[in-house]
Image (tube, rainbow, N blue to C red; front, top):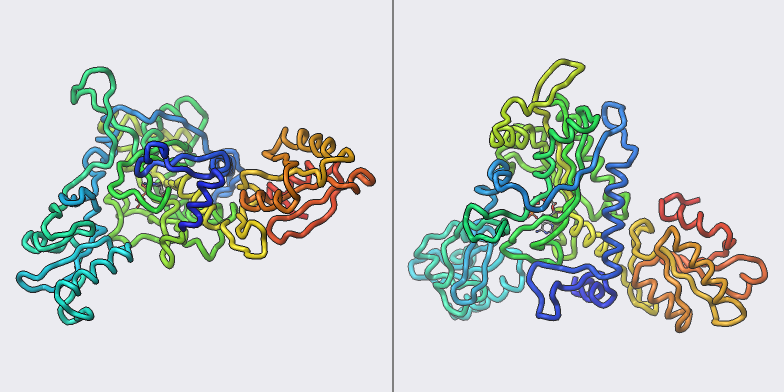
Length: 505
Ligand code: ATP
């Protein structure tokens, strides 16, 4: 993972936000290549869900319309959605180190004996675990742990007395960890100039509520009929207690969410369909099946509104930092009619907010299937999937992006800077850049130019040489197997489009 992070910085995929001031934890900026990569991911999502040609389980084209709602909404939205009260992670502060930990991430190692010294660490952190074990052995003057005495327990299961004997992961002495406290993950801000609680507002922690709050507007202003979906992508903010794993857990991130409204009696059918659909989509943009998994949630894991529903699952990716486990890329949930009912109640619209089915002369609150994906986690998965070591290459690594995702689609090079080659190359570049992101490069040796493109994940390099002048063909060099072939200059534009769209001859 460290190598991927270093490459991202060096080649301009991802930088730490405010790096010149030492950075700010949990915030990331996308550089020139990263911006293209993330934009390709978002465009593909928008194209495939909103403008796509999906056919639903009922055999009809799937109808999804777009929305772009605000980041700051009326504070009552978050009361209705449950975020104002329920969006909490119990959290533990360390008074000695000023570090903050999620209580459910901490475990405690030590003997269950009066007066025994205990050591807390973040369960997923192998380094902290090793440090705690070493400290415990040193304190008890032992060589190895004793499985009959030393046990590992969740931090949330220990008593106050035990907590006072617990040494925190970043502390030098025991007793500095506070009890777990609730902590709201929403960023608070002020609307207007006056510092008054009545003016408090929140940065949205998910894009979904903008969709629910606009449900009636969309129904009244367009021709949508259940079943239909509303899609939105945009920024979301969560004051995560422990942002970590590069962009995986950030405090500012982008979501790509669909709320798909259905008749309640079709929930099982649509849930199953979306689950498969979304899983296949991640495969279609280049994530391999061996690194992807669909994990159905156990009933006791489910949010209150989902308990009686058709199901909730996560589409997960095996990131280098989760391996051999997986981390969530997207959640697909049957949210029933929870959100629409909540907004109907809290806004005072009541039963008037129900959807009216003209054909069936029926009024009801539609149920919702929500596929909710993260654009930053998706981009990170694309980077991790693409990262390939190859000692035989000048660059030592190359990024094996699907051509549709690659930030630069082709590099265009004159073999040498004479005999009219630069002029032809420039002409091709000017033509291709009308429809694709392509780069013209005439500096350094051809080997170095290939190496630069390999590291940027550019799938094709087009070289203009002396044969081009004779027979109007150029050399295409393929990134993954370094194979070369000659193609006519005149067809290169349509050939490139076919490759990007995945239409291979
Ligand atoms: P987690 O359990 O990892 O905190 P979540 O279940 O709270 O995630 P959702 O509320 O379902 O996440 O949000 C939908 C999607 O938004 C996630 O699948 C993920 O891709 C993205 N997402 C959520 N939180 C973050 C974050 N802190 N940083 C980056 N992406 C995030």
